[in-house]
Image (tube, helix red, strand yellow):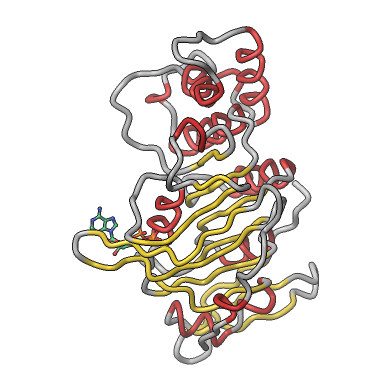
Length: 285
Ligand SMILES: Nc1ncnc2c1ncn2[C@@H]1O[C@H](COP(=O)(O)OP(=O)(O)OP(=O)(O)O)[C@@H](O)[C@H]1O
């Protein structure tokens, strides 16, 4: 199933603080890994990018948050040309929660979160009491307040992920990019991260692996395969058995769970035996 909705639905303004990426292509190591991807996130909407391993989700997001330079394309956030603007201008309004594994210096948790204040400060301006209060509040929000003086390096993967979210909260962004934000998290903390992000009420663009989770939290999904958008739209329309088969090469059945009334996915083996079922989680956490 291939749709050309991606090209037709991008006309118009995504809204005052929305994101509009147009015709982004990226080449890495001689290979074109993102192919002419266009996407819009209206202000306050939660948009997911899904697709199999290596399909280019992270690379596309990195091209927007300035870690990877695209070959071509534009990315505009609330009227600001992200690709042409200095990081200082970009990161006063855009925060990123990504995998954070290599750290050359040993920072405390509070110091890590305080880095979220950096884009808002003038050169050589030190951390003030207001910044410290914002940091404390962010750490409380992710239930990591008691870790404030711990070395970030000594934290577990899931604890680190929550601190990285706290750093993004301390940035007080108008828009959030999540690059596989729940990889290390158990189910409670996955739900908690999505719940915290939803409560912010700002535009969110997230690369996600868990399809039922994506269906539950995203207003709209873009599906990537081999670097290109296959289709996009509301999760209930996009996540069909045909789409899952085409993109992930697995058989499945989608159905409404009779208990929750929500979309669920049963993955099937070649004899149509159910391998696993995945339900959309409740948003009440
Ligand atoms: N620095 C690089 N040099 C060469 N190839 C790269 C580089 N970074 C990524 N790639 C390749 O680009 C492709 C897309 O990678 P990317 O990390 O964007 O995929 P992804 O969809 O986020 O994957 P996953 O779900 O496994 O995290 C992959 O084939 C990857 O091997």
